[in-house]
Length: 169
Image (cartoon, rainbow, N blue to C red; front, side, top):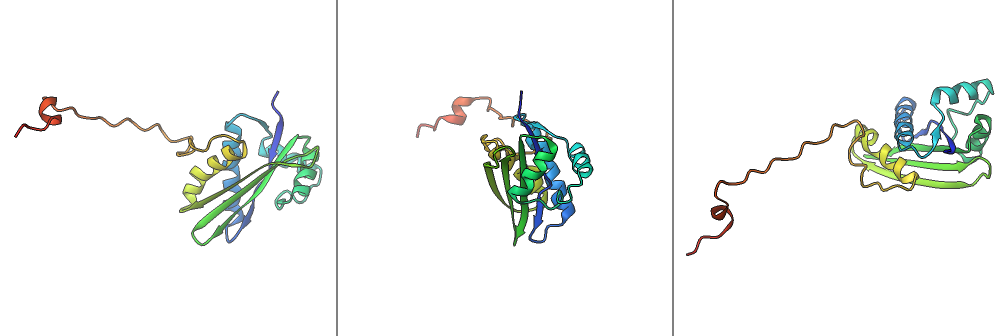
């Protein structure tokens, strides 16, 4: 039995649009869910429940107390919240996992990415999800949807003795 978890849409900061941040949050949720450590509440279900409970802060919920309040309404054990911002050419992603019952922030991850927003989506979301879960981030080098790279072919010369041994002078 895996613990239940819901992931709020991250707050947009530093010139990032709300739409960009929502897409990045969705990618993070997909990467987090794919790692299989928690039962993640689907965003549609989360939105439906919070709307029924008249929880108005779900689009702007970057503080622990807000995440705990939402988590209680959703009946999940953990809530993940955070922010994505941009300063100059660098993006920063900060995520936090709070235990809804105790109110303690149990895990946190901070990932900085220099470069294009497309690469932030492909690489940094996966890296941050792995970091938040305490997993190695070394494997977060290419997006999960990328096809495996073909091994390079090494051509061996016909006469290896000539290719690898220096000639006697």
